[in-house]
Image (cartoon, rainbow, N blue to C red; front, side, top):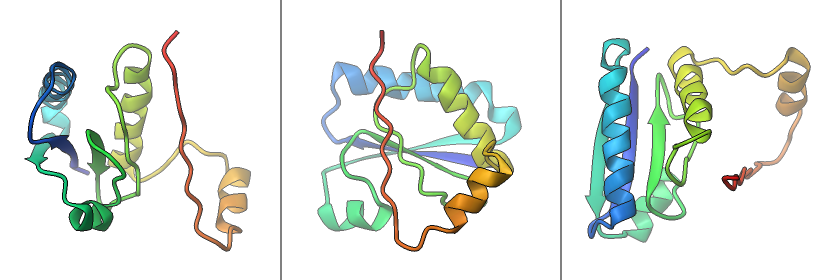
Length: 123
């Protein structure tokens, strides 16, 4: 399944967002044969649009496969995070996670929406 990386970035780039964009371009180029493409959306912050796509801040990376799985990636997927980001791409590509059957069953049992953020600090 093709994967599109939507990259929401501020309209005024910084050194960090330029480096992040370059890294995403390299990831997309390396996986072009597998159907990974990058779409850069460098616009002024628009609260209504951002609420529609479900991002809280920029820069943000939204991987979309057969559908939008609700994954929002903030920060550059570099260093040890690149391996995790590659796993996200594989999961979005296949439409399947590596969660166990029991974990999936527990998640299906949730009755209210859940907002989950995983924070990672490089060591």
